[in-house]
Length: 235
Ligand code: C5P
Image 1 (cartoon, rainbow, N blue to C red):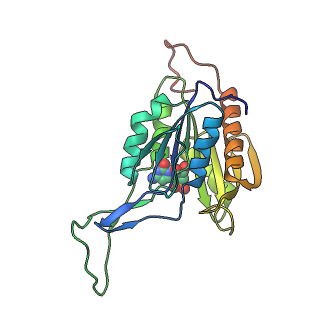
Image 2 (image 1 turned 120 degrees about the vertical axis):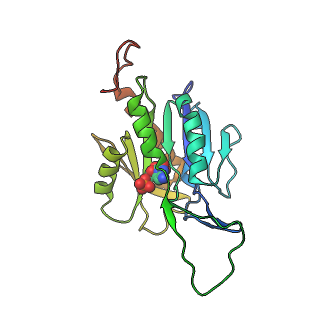
Image 3 (image 1 turned 90 degrees about the vertical axis):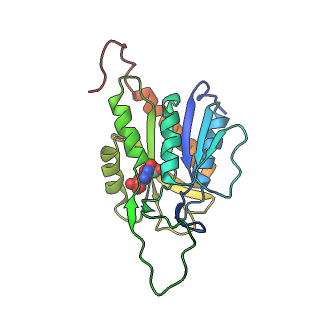
């Protein structure tokens, strides 16, 4: 395996988040964490240092990765924002819950006729990083997000690309059965501002390698680092 990520630090988010309702219940989604863990393994094999920020999963993280376990989107955000500046590549494969419960009950909620939960939107970690990266004058990390879509795949990916100011969006068609969620296999499309790359169905480790190859190509296309005296905020 080419050691083309030697000397690089890759920050990866993986898995779902759990948003507590009360001490025993939470809101979540069907992410198994396998795509993010496969990315961590693939990056290690290419010689990278890997920081894996993981939501709750049943998986064993690669021993060589520095793994930070989190539960909620807020915790994931803190873990990512504390470490993103160490990274030259950031791949956000986590399926972050869109909402958290406004008033978490300190006691287990008793069953009653109907229950209303008030939900508030979670911070968008990827979009926050996109803005932060844009605002710093330094050479910025390659930033890649995921999108799980059931319709208008490319259109949604393009809109996310510009809205979240990222270098690429990896689109999963979650309407298809047998791949994607909770499966060892996947089929994705990598969308950048200039390219649409279809990656045919394969094991997630193989898909992960294709995503890393795309990330390396993006890095090669980036402009050379700007001297410290010049602001690159508008680049
Ligand atoms: O907008 P949507 O949730 O579909 O975007 C998916 C991408 O954004 C994924 O890369 C995911 O990790 C990231 N995301 C995030 N914080 C959120 C929601 C999504 O970082 N609150």
